[in-house]
Length: 271
Image 1 (cartoon, helix red, strand yellow):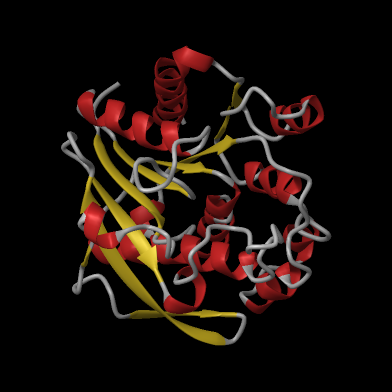
Image 2 (cartoon, one colour):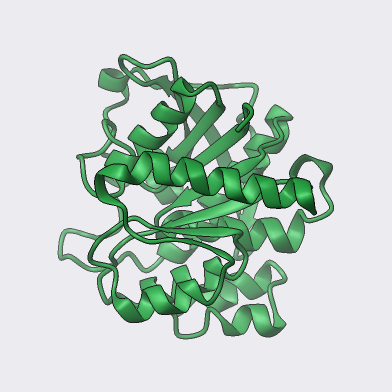
């Protein structure tokens, strides 16, 4: 496969957060693709528990300053960047005081799912899109990791389908094991405020983290199962949603994903 521009969007990336089944491949995959000669850019949220001094984050003034309205609230978008240690790669961080200052990722000190996680996820995904537009960088592939990144395909397909920057972009979603956790009840109202309606909004009614993945897959060109623990029912639903489906591959993950990229890009050139 010729050199491609690949955008990685993940809810967690090591070493900025502890190593787990999402944060590890979210670092390893872009690093390996970068080594293969692809042009790579990486985005994640700037959670308050990330030590900015230790990881040497700094604000990118030229990219910051955009305001994004989420559920009728005007939220400033701040972009920060850091270099990945021992790698010729940078990570862009989506930041906002209201959504990401707190010293936690998704749960409060009582173990309760934050009641604004829907708005945080939507702000994150829309922030990535707006930043990529400001960079003027046209990705051939966008690969989303985790439920928090899974709203990006929806917003890209519904609101940026006619943007030349994303005209040929292929979308891939990596799905991981999720707890049986309900999304906040405000999710559909938040989506409706942005103009999501009809059959699109039905996919997100009474949603939990698993159904969020299934809804997102319907807007994607490929799905990758990133966790051995993903339920069989979820995998079957995902397999029926996309033409290109990659089951869990363990240690062969990177090469298998690269082959998936090749397949998707060949389909584009044939079409």
